[in-house]
Length: 326
Image (tube, rainbow, N blue to C red; front, side):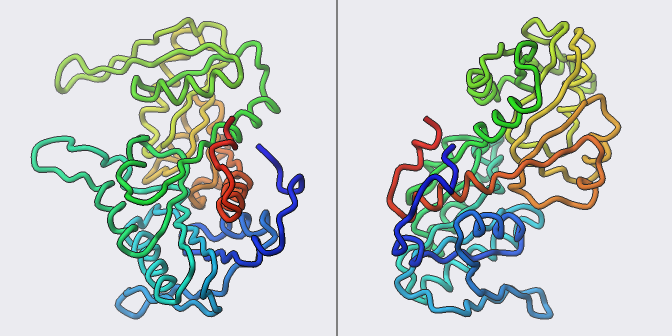
């Protein structure tokens, strides 16, 4: 990934940029703005007594290239509404272009009909964002790549892999690593990271033989004596991750760590991770840390601000974003 201080941007490209922060993850937005050397646009996002959301942009944005940074994490509906109302406010204020920067795209797990008479909520959310006035979307590690096609506007799906690879190379012995996908559905993602560090790949095959019986985890690949890295896009309850770690250790793995992009970690997930056999869980800061995550001894957060900042700068300059991952 190219570092900010290696590129000189013409003043006009950066002067015409406005960065707006929602309430979901202000520290990440501030870090992105610092990377770009651009102050945050003064914008008030508050609630009335009945929790109705009100937005007031306190600077002139007419003809500007505006970027709303907001993860639709818990509480997902509140944070989604903030994005929609901020986009509407920018559109009615004559912003030249509005980009919704959504590091964590909530509702992404509802990307297909999972059963009869169920919604495809990811498509509904894509429609809402488009109709609110967004001209393009920038997000990180979508749960399913096809969600890009749910939008009728340009959508860039960034990958956290370069940030994770850099961290792995700095901290681990590459000669003894094994990258592991915690389920069959995540093989493509795990294989891509394994290729970057030239490590072999294993897969956890999870199945339930009969209703009411516990899941059986079969390991596809030779993990004995290896330091294993579980790779996935989302960790929510943490149950699958902890069970996979136990299964790998039972097969002779030396130790098990996990690199996950989005640390949803709802409910008692942080406590579950802390008491598990995972050596370490590494997540990015696409979702703001809770107090439980900050206190967990084996959960570490790495920043993705530089990656997003670079993508925002390239979008503003009409340069290639995909070349970040060549």
